[in-house]
Amino acid sequence: MFSLKGKRALVVGVANDQSIAWGCARALRAQGAEIAVTYLNEKAEPYVRPLAEELEAPIFAPLDVSSAVQLDALFEQIREQWGSLDILIHSIAFCPKDDLHGRVIDCSAEGFAMAMDISVHSFLRLIKRAEPLMGPGGTILTVSFYGSEKVVSHYNIMGPVKAALESTTRYVAAELGNKGISVHALSPGPLATRAASGIAHFDRMLAKAAEKAPTHALATIDDIGAYAAFLASNEAHNTTGVIHPIDGGYRIIG
Ligand code: NAD
Image (cartoon, rainbow, N blue to C red; front, side, top):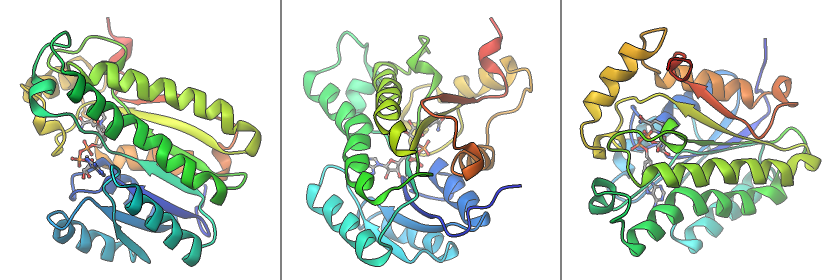
């Protein structure tokens, strides 16, 4: 029904073949988009390289979003090689362990600042550099979680962090609407990934999601990828600023 042929996408957040970013990258590629892939550091590179090869990614570059030098180098490469960018996917989050596992009240200022910087402000840093390369039909996506709205056991400080990410999504959508660029957050139910393994008792969260959701099925990275691919298409051009649940209907059950 829709095609992404001719579109160029930057996908940030592939760590391995369980990453939500990988599900998105694979789905975008299947619809014909060209994909630029980043990896966090030298340790991550051997896990991400074969995935980038599978995508025939013409751009494969290191990116720790705390490095302005790496951010600038990546976008310079995109500008030189592609000249434009149609799709940006931000699928990253980080919080120091002690702050993630403690009460929200006890979160240190340093941990709070770092979680907000890597998980939220990095979205703005990417968008700021992507904006000059994007024209009408551009799509920007990030990934949030229901813990932003409701108190989810053990999600702790990431709840307020995701709330900030969702609000950021709405403000940026308002700012870029007149350029024809849409901005969304995907909000999948819990799924077992490396980032999720840092959350205490995550297995309980998975069991509850499967039990409570009307579909009784957990979200998969393929579900999320298919949704992302549609949002990136021209057919989805008149929707923006939305947080999209991909959770088997979990939210409708009281
Ligand atoms: P993942 O571990 O596969 O991905 C997290 C990514 O963040 C990794 O690729 C990691 O390299 C990257 N990252 C961390 N610090 C970074 C930095 N300084 N610079 C660049 N990249 C950095 O796990 P995932 O579950 O696919 O997480 C992707 C996103 O999805 C996160 O925002 C997460 O909060 C969100 N999310 C996950 C779930 C879930 O249950 N897994 C549910 C809803 C939302």
